[in-house]
Image 1: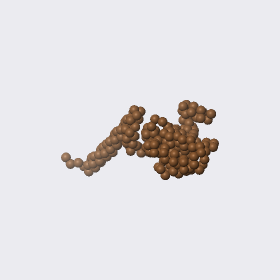
Image 2: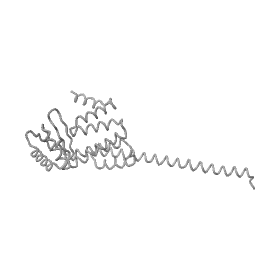
Image 3: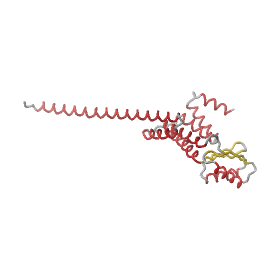
Image 4: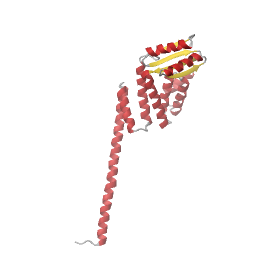
Length: 238
């Protein structure tokens, strides 16, 4: 049977239309499935990472959170979570006590203070070394020498006393990673109250209570329902 030209054109248009519908709808359905599978994989990675962290398996948690971060490189929550693992790892390397070494320098000269610092570093593989002094020259000498020896130094004055906290070894490595991940989380999400809270805890740990309180205050502004933080701030103010 010979088809008339209008009928032939209609048949061809129908074939093209059916093919187009199949092509576009088919692709969209596959894309939707792929996204759903990826989201489910991301959720499972995060769940497994959290379980590992709660079980104290910190290295495994780091690996899992890092994989999740590859999937969601702009996810502020994952940066914060990974920062929390790094923080715990840093404390673990510091050992059972914080600080690892503490010394109040009263009448020591700069040379004697530096000698004391070197002894502390030699005897402390990883952790925090704290020195207290009332002399700026001694504090300056310790800070310069500690940085030259690879330490991370945090300095704060309270009335007439200067406190220097020196992070060394793996404790320094992991705590600084934690700090940087909290800061990255806040870069991505400026309203992330938990990241502010965690960054406050970091600065409190290294002796910078002034910076710590700023971050705690910001965390509380963003989440005034945080009763524990509210109580802590009230006690600190008193």
